[in-house]
Amino acid sequence: MDAELCEHCGNCTRCPYQAITLNRNKVPCFDAALCIGCSLCAAAGRQAIIFVPESAPKAKLVQMVLYGARVIPVRGTYDDAFQLSLEYTAHKGGLNRNTAYHPLTLEGKKTVGLEIYEQNRFKVPDAILVPVGDGVIISGVHKAFLDLKAAGLTARLPRLICVQAERSAAIHHYIRTGKYQNARRPATIADSISVSVPANAHLARRAVQESRGFSLTVTDREIVRGQRTLAEKTGVFAEPAATATVAALRRLQGTDLLGRREQIVLLITGHGLKDVDAAARFLRFPAAVGPRPDAPL
Image (cartoon, rainbow, N blue to C red):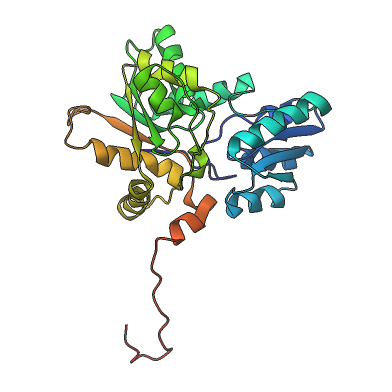
């Protein structure tokens, strides 16, 4: 398991460094990965402008606002917020570092794969399960191992397994059928991978095919179960989008798609504190007891 939980934002976020290295006063960008972007902009004295879907978890918004970002909720979906951010920078300028739009974001995500290789004692695992929304992380992981192979450091690639929420699965269906269609009305508890028009669909499909991997979907019920299992068994509290990989591993147990002796990596991409409400709605909290030694426990 590779738990990519950044101390600044709780996300697997390795690309907004350009927000502070380029001399721009405005850094228009938006949603999920941008909590750390807000953090770095604050440290560098830059202004971050963040477009988010109106349904974004409040915990993510809290971080952005505390970092001093200008947060603009958009009535609509992730895709609507993405498009509005592109239109904003087209008319008003600034650095748009949206994932799957700014080319350096893929290079940033690539470092996840490089660290898996390094932390695995410079060995390539047999398979890596990746939660997929826009398709950028899985494309970045693929590029990392392509670069390692091109450099002569390894002779093979890990199989990349694309994991999507059942109700937000445009890339999964693209991989399975070879025909692309937008996801209709994506609605899932895993908000970080809920997207109708994945901007990196083509590269994501290529990553799975070239690595001889495959794709599958999991239900919200399975994702919630995976979140609790991960917390109870490993002490890692991850957001629903991240625990899609745990749900997928459970689904794959007993099948011939993964060998029992294979080394399998689960990519955990976001901290559970980013969406506490999603976990809380399925928990039962104990009633208070009286402050007496003889109180029933």
